[in-house]
Image (cartoon, rainbow, N blue to C red):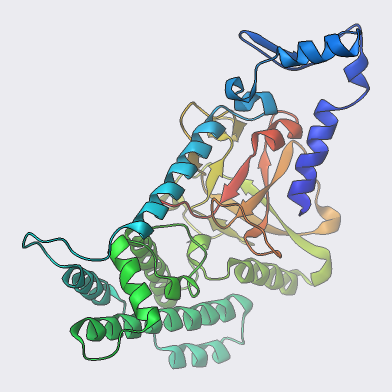
Amino acid sequence: TDNCDRRVVATYMNEYLGDFLFDSFQPFHFYHGEGFDYHIPKDQSREACVAEIAGMPGIEAQTPEVFGLHPNAEIDYLTNSSKKLWHDLLDLQPRTASGGGGITREDYITSIASDLDSKLPKPFDLSKLRQALEADGFSPVFVVLVQELERWEILNARMSRSLAALKKALLGEIAMSTQLDRLGTNLFNGQLPDMWRKLTPATDKMLGSWMVFHLRRQAQYAGWVEAGEPKVIWLSGLSIPETYTAALVQTTCRKYGWPLDKSSLYTRVTSYTSAAQVVEKPADGCYVEGLYLEGAAWDVQRRALTRQPPKVLVQELPIMQIIPVELSKLRLQGTIRVPLYITQQRRNAMGVGMMMEADVDTGVHDSHWVLQGVALVMNTDQ
């Protein structure tokens, strides 16, 4: 478990277990809704208590609100279950093309491979960038750019080589290896190939939406190389976004002479709703776009968390500002720290999967949002 898991458990303990359970003047209701009431049975025999508990609605009649969640949580669960079933069905579909004169499986894979190959961007001049880095005095943010582009070129080289080899294998010019066969199956099913997934930021996107994501990454890198650090950074497009935020802290510490081990980051959501509204970069830190909010909605007028509308599971957050600060001077009120995950899977195995915790404004107690499962994610599966 991580700190977020422990916080959820502690919140359930504080909200559902305590001396208030036995307050005879203000009876505690775990949940009170139309037609049912979850409460502690009155003082009576064991048999009567068991009978009263058995008469409460079963799991089939429960709503997510019984556990402090929003009704949208059930929609999210059913949607994810359907996606998983669909992915399993794709893997089970037959690999042979049916008769009828249509396009064959091999021809279809070849056309997809050729289309992807034609969209691969041209490589950056890394040697020139390394020379510029040395001339710049190895500034932390410039170092991050060079490291990002080195990983970027490795990914594109792997894509180019694997697509070329797959097309040759489909023509019979070389042997079809297990890896190439799996690559062809992924392309046929519209899935992100496993051999590419290891070199790209964690994502749940299918191949089509991932390619749009990939080209957007290229556009950000190209703009960064040509015009300098972006006014608004798209963190989701970085291979390791933690290195960029660490570079911001290091740069600010050098600027003001702060001790690095006693500095940190805090965040605030701005009134900007698009990157076009930002005129210039902040003096310290950065502006971030492309973050998504789950478990709550964002009230633009109040600039605070609010309850989700029905059937709206994800909302894009306005521009967020990340600000380096000395820990001794950090004083926040009326905010809650929410996890910022890489994907909607919300995984944080061995510290991988959650980038940081962000501060967002709220007008209600933290426990409400903890039970609602509020979190930020860097990219969705769309």
